[in-house]
Amino acid sequence: MQVFDHPEFDHHRQIVFGCDRDSGLHAIIAIHDTRRGPALGGLRIYPYASEAEALTDVLRLSRGMTYKSALADLPLGGGKAVIIADPRREKTPSMLQAMGRLVESLGGRYITAEDSGTDEADMRIIRSETLHVSGLGHDGDSGDPSPFTAYGVFCAMKSAVRHRFGHDDLHELRVAIQGVGHVGAHLARELHAAGAQLVLTDVDRDSLGVLADELGAESVMPDAIFDADVEVFAPCAMGAVLTEAVVGRLKAGVICGAANNQLATAEVAERLHGRGVLYTPDYIANAGGVIEVEAQRHPHYNRSAVMRHVERIAITVDEILSRAQAQDMSPAVVADQLARERLAV
Ligand code: NAD
Image (cartoon, rainbow, N blue to C red):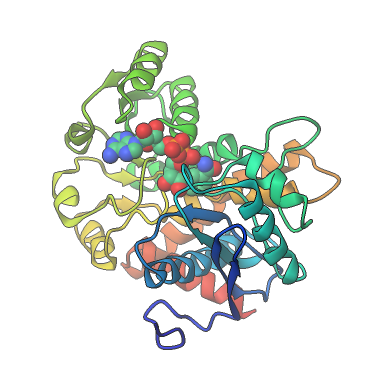
């Protein structure tokens, strides 16, 4: 398995392989960049088919965190951690404690947080071994960042809608949301409160039905969401949803959602641009969560200051979409350029 010649290797500062025989821990931590601050990024537990697959994921995701934090104007670098295990069957307190010791061994260069396969209770176990963990909540409040992520997507969407349609009035705007889990449900409620008309889908048909009834929204089968007659498509389920085939079906003029890594390939961004569909780069739209997680690390947590910071996502989206329009380029490419500029100073 190659590291320095790996296609996803991007001059990562440090890559640590950690093993604990007693608990069965097999983990990789990747610190991509620390120029702006310690490398913060979630801990993912997933039954990767191979070490190579886990390495690919952690290299790619840690780099994404560097870009996300830079464009969210946070004093953070980018990092990520993965444990090769099935979180439902193999995750144990002793494995999480061993992970906490591995994080501690990096002396604060890497700060861990929740990601898929981990939750707030897991972070509390890790906290017994290291202070370098965030997302544990404040003053008895939950550490769940989803409401902040949803609010950031809402702010980003208003900015993108203004660029594409010339106004940011969400009243009567038709929005399709794919996935109404933690983030998607919050987003749906905010859009509903702003007067938007919603088309919702989820593979969890029971939760979907309850939410659709609550909001008077239309609900469709998962595959039908791509054909919905809407102005905005909000992917809030999983990554790689924007394939060539999906782009060919979408009727929306704006894409803005919470899911990570929405573009199946880099070429899809060009295809969207060519079709006049405004793609809001996912890692900017969904940065509300990391803004909240960063704020939770500090003793003087101030919720309204966090909300104001999340609102600044709209300003970044505005800058990227203006530049993309002026240079006739895809916003995805412009976002990466801007992130690199912010890292260089
Ligand atoms: P979640 O698991 O709570 O919600 C995802 C929802 O999508 C679930 O209800 C699931 O049933 C549904 N779903 C899965 N496959 C689907 C399909 N094919 N069609 C329709 N629905 C489907 O996750 P979440 O925390 O709401 O996060 C949603 C996305 O946003 C994820 O990609 C996540 O990585 C990203 N994200 C989340 C946060 C956060 O604060 N939670 C922050 C940044 C990015």
